[in-house]
Image 1 (cartoon, one colour):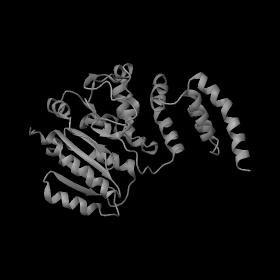
Image 2 (cartoon, one colour; image 1 turned 90 degrees about the vertical axis):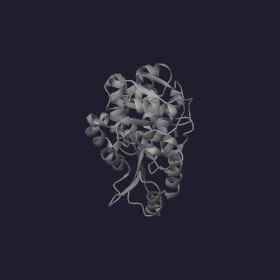
Image 3 (cartoon, helix red, strand yellow; image 1 turned 120 degrees about the vertical axis):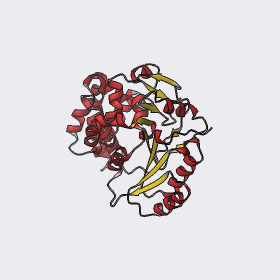
Image 4 (spheres, one colour; image 1 turned 180 degrees about the horizontal axis):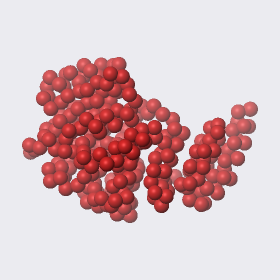
Length: 300
């Protein structure tokens, strides 16, 4: 079935020095029913053969184009540039190295055509069953039914959205670039205002988490700072959504070992304490000096 709705969606792929992954992603898109939409590659000044790959697709597909930044502006700044340049009624910003399965995506196309919602969730990590799915719900109602809204929403390509709906949160998004999640003020807005979203019937995109350029402590601090953007009553809910598969005891022990590696980490610890529940605060207070002593003896 052919959908004459090219202006409905612009797919923007952010990329840097992963030409093989990029080519695989482009082949996947152009081999699917999403091939009728505009596809733009936002190349962050790659030094490999990314430009050659893009030129090959430009000669074959009239709805494909590539933009190469004059300098590498960083991954998260490139995400914000993608938000700005999209001209589709809807936008889908994806990464070059994730996995896509368009074999059961007709429900997404139908929702796009009808413009029924401002946000569609398309998939994320394969760590949990994709459920509930094929439903229109508010984020709060989804979470009551076991959906990991903050975890999945933190994965940028999960979110296919009405382009103009992002604009009210764009300043907050720029401000959150240092915390690796520039799009989360937008995701938070849907949660706080009980906006209806659609969850696809199947995972269209799966996170591979390959080639990350940051360590765990930087991610941990970034996610903590991002959760602090929420009102106090919801910070804890968002924070713990990332750590669902570990017991709280094990989690606090891991946090203590992690924090014991850092010098002058008290400011961050105070931020963390403002989010944790009472029992976990106590556990972390007990574990921190033990972890410090452990590090001292281990380094002798």
